[in-house]
Amino acid sequence: MAKKVMVITGGSRGIGAATAQLAASRGYAVCISYVSNASAAADIVRAIENVDGQAIAVRADVAREEDVLGLFEACDEAFGPVTALVNNAGVLDKATRVDEMTAERLNRIFITNITGSFLCAREAIRRMSHKHGGQGGAIVNLSSAAARLGGPGEYVDYAASKGAIDTMTIGLAKEVAAEGIRVNAVRPGVIYTDIHASGGEPGRVDRLKDMVPMKRGGDAFEVARTILWLLSEEASYTTGALVDVTGGR
Image (tube, rainbow, N blue to C red; front, top):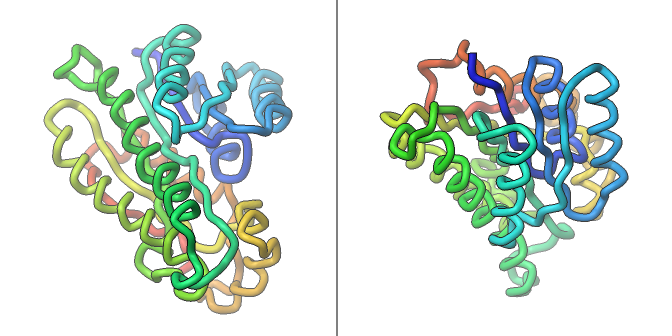
C-alpha cells in the first residue's frame, strides 16, 4: 500500500489542528503549515509524535508562491509525495460593511483564501495526477456556509472568497477526475475556533448558536471527521461535492 501523506495548510490551530491529529491517528504522515505561531505548530507535531505518529511543521504563507513551493518540497523530503491535501488556511478581518472595506483588506483576504488554495492545489496535482506520473490522491478545500449566506454586515469579502472556493472545487473536480484525483469541499458553519477572535468577536459562536437548528456551535473535530471521510476510500465515488457541516443552518 502506498504511503499516505497529507499536507494541511493552516494546521496549527482550529480545524487544521484537529484534522492533523485525526489524520495521524489514521495512518497519515502529516505536514502542517503555519505562518507565525511556531509554538502552536510544534505542539501539534509533538502531540502526534507522542502517539507514534509522523508529522512536521513548515513555516509557509500560502499567499506567497515561494512559500508554497517550499512547503511541498519539505513534505517531499520528509515523507514523499503528497496523497492528500487539505486547503484549510484562511483569513478574515474585523466585521464591517462593504462600503468601509479597503483594497488592502480585500487583497489580503482574496490572495490568501483564493490564490493560496489554487497554488497548493497546483502543487498537489503535479504530484498526484496520473498525467504527471503520480498515483492519484484527494483534495479537500475548506469553504464556509458563508459562501451561501453571504456574510452581510460582517464578512461579505470572506464569504465571496469562499464562494470562489466552491466554484474552484466543482471545476477542478471535473478537470482532474480522470487523472486519479478527487476534489471536494467542506463548508463549516459556526464552529468553536479562534478565527472568530481575529474577526473581533471571540464569542460569536455563542451569539449565533440559537440560530442553528441543532442549537449549538460545532466542534473542530466534527469538521475534521468529515474531511477525513472525504479523503478516504469510503468516499471513492464522491468528487465535486460541497458538504455542509453546519448543524442544519
